[in-house]
Image (cartoon, rainbow, N blue to C red; front, side, top):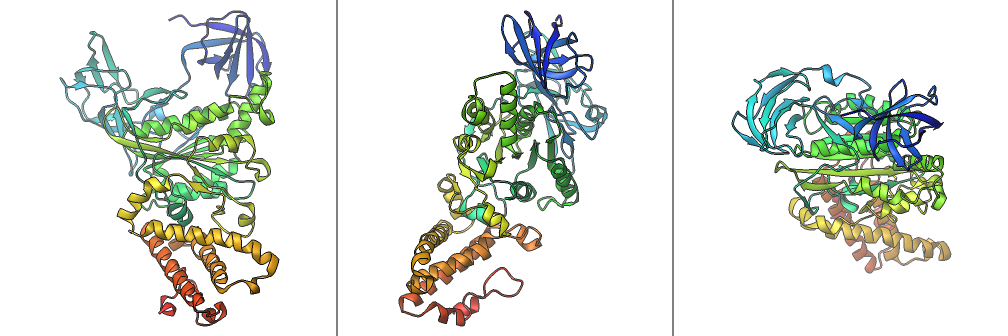
Length: 550
């Protein structure tokens, strides 16, 4: 195929213009200038072609050539992704994937008929994860040759097949996938299983479903990155894809340093061995932020198709939206609310809606859970990015500045947060954790809601004038806040709390609450209950003394 070329007419930051008619296609990947900077066609008219460049355009000059590739923007997928850090176009920042040899076990034999999505080889990518090499999409045929088990690079041939039309194709470990087009699946399932995080406020009050989409908005200093780190460390996903989109470079460095030291509680191996880091930090070209988001979810789909549960941490989608706003401004498009482009909602939807639990083309079951941090300026949740994100997620974990400044972590506001997955997951919790789980959950939420209502009254008449039942509600809300919702990430026994223990803690709280309310109904003052030690903590222990309840 002949290579289409054009010449640069104008440069505006990461946006490059070609004057005159070209035969480049919308969305086509191109190489720009003598340095062959990677770009993508984002606008076409009879008079002009517009290209966004994903690299620094400093030194680029008008007159330099632009070379088309004939295909849309894609990334190369193969063993060697896990445990490493990449830029937004999946170019390795730490190693050379193509030169490494992998121990390959061929799982099919000559004469067999293979279809798209089937596993034809297995590679121990890390000590934790077996990489299942899949037949590419739209490929089907009979095997006429297989390589012997052994060590191969990702581009060495492993299979040769003859398609139904007589053509022959050679398959290797490396495959290509377009980042803007979701990888196909056989069917989608409704959510039925929670993503267990070990964080009490999430698992018990605002559960996340495997295959769900979650927004985590919060102003500066509310602990978005820290909370995502905790989820990445402890959630029961098989693979973690962490996307640093426009955040500070030192945060990505901290992720790498921490994950390389942490032991995975599931396998006993290093946590980094099942983690992929996509880095588009604040000092990197702004146009690459958009690509980085879609690259991350494409990698997640790749491992999902192998039958794994994948969790995607995007930190943060606000920087992605700001990149859209900057590029839209350079293109002189009509701005919408707060200068964001009118297509902001559709771009956010194209990211979050790639979450889900599916049956893959190969017949296995896998899932992608997307947890996207949002950074509204000043912590204002009414701004466009937060509001548009709420349209496409079913779990909303609102981070609160006042809680963070009070050293209450995770700083999730229990009044503003919600999870629409709670009802759908109730059957799983009652079957696998405890039959009263949702009753206890409801009582804890009622107590916290009652606290907010009673505080308004207490501010007017004084807390001493409240009925004893309401005094008990305030005290129990304090117990829930300090003993259940607050969690210490640096304390080994508190960083991750199993669901069974969360259930027992809720059971203890509900038992204490119901007993105190019974005593209050008998006109026994709250002060007398405290004298009996009913609300005391054992020193250095997270639970309450049950002997005081007898």
